[in-house]
Image 1 (tube, rainbow, N blue to C red):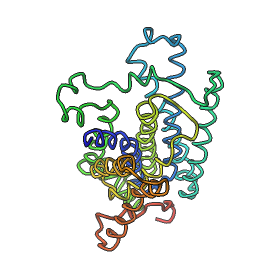
Image 2: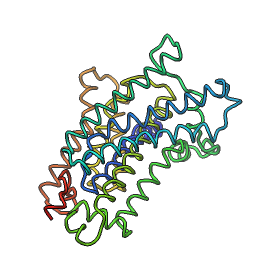
Image 3: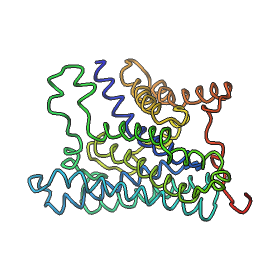
Amino acid sequence: MISSFICRAILLGVPLLYGSTGEIVTEKSGHLNLGIPGIMYVGAVGGVVGAFLYENACGNDIANMSPLLAVLIPFICSLLGSMLMGLIYSFLTVTLRANQNVTGLALTTFGIGLGNFFGGSLIKLTDSDLPNVVLTKTSGFFSQKLPFADDLGWFGEIFLSHDFLTYLSVVIALIVAFVLNRTRVGLNLRSVGENPATADAAGINVTRYKYVATCIGSAIAGLGGLQYVMVYATGVWSNNAFGDRGWMAIALVIFALWKPSLAIFGSFLFGALCNANNYIQGLGTETQELFKMLPYVVTIIVLIITSMRKKREYQPPESLGLPYFREER
């Protein structure tokens, strides 16, 4: 029971890890992107569209499907869709200097509407009696686990029985942590987020760093949507079924203190908190809803504690959410 609980917590936490890692990259450039929920939604539907087209091109026969293409096509579609959303956000907030909070919220609304439009269109094409698109063949390729995991008992079940997107999320978080803390690119990016005027005076191209960081962060976040649909939902797409995972990913950024390595632990903790109500018997509906609040409650507690301690390393980038006007330098 304990091993199944941990596996379920990891499964629930992986989309949050992708979303929070992508948002950390964006926020390190000084941009608060509240459009992450919409970006993850577009990343999910992008993968669904790619998988749907490929399955239909193969005649819905798994024997005609290449495992590599079945994974690669939805993966690339997800990256392109979410990166395009990041590019739109960058153009509005960096080039046009629009308000970041309003732009992010508008992007969330736009992304969910766009996802529902394409998802609804695919549902009509399938002529299904149910309001969803079923891509179990593609999901099977995404959900493949290591063949020897079952032979290693609880260790194999907890650490080796997951899909490749789960392991990729941890690898990406560790790479981001290394780049931010150990490379010149990371130093320049953090400089842009802390004081863009000083970074600009030092010869750093502020606009380029903001654009690249936002687009890469959006692409990473979009993979969280892809993992949710293809692994957690076993390839079943339903409009508005994504829930509040995008907002939880933003909350996780605060919990992780803008550190990708800490976000790995935080994402699995959030997954455990979201899953706790399913393992406690005798709870009423009201109590179960209270359990769903736990990740946000924990985030608020961490925010209060870090604010009281007032340590600089626990705070967000100094220029987070503020537009940069080079003329005022």
